[in-house]
Image: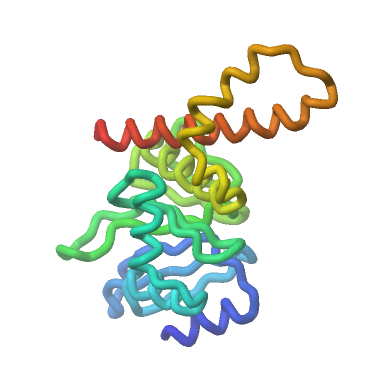
Length: 207
């Protein structure tokens, strides 16, 4: 079955989400939904499928999780950047029937079009994911993925987080010229992302 997901990845099919499902006569399975509306049902647990995807991209999943935990100061449910177009974040999508069966699916951050303002529903291009997590938790997971995306784009932001937090805000009290505007706007975006990281960390500790 692993070769099936490899085939889709080799043909540049973009994953929209991975969902743990129970199928009659097959038991615990994983449904892979692609951005082009195609679906693939694998008779494997979502953890097995996730490991297969990581192997395809030559990534050690355990090491990746450890790295993300340190970045976000978060122990569980961290986003997983597996490829340029594949950044998975976890959401609860089912109640396990058997102990140790997974309850969480994974959504590709880059495929999210909208998160419902009221209901715990994630809108993709051609699919809706009805989550069992509360909307607050969904938004937190989404913002964690958003932050990881920014850190992937700008490793220096992660390296200099404390410096940005303590030094950059003071710059906005001085007068700036039009020539400085774009540079300041970029730095402001960086500060917002770092503050978001801090708020997520505080929220995680209070849960």
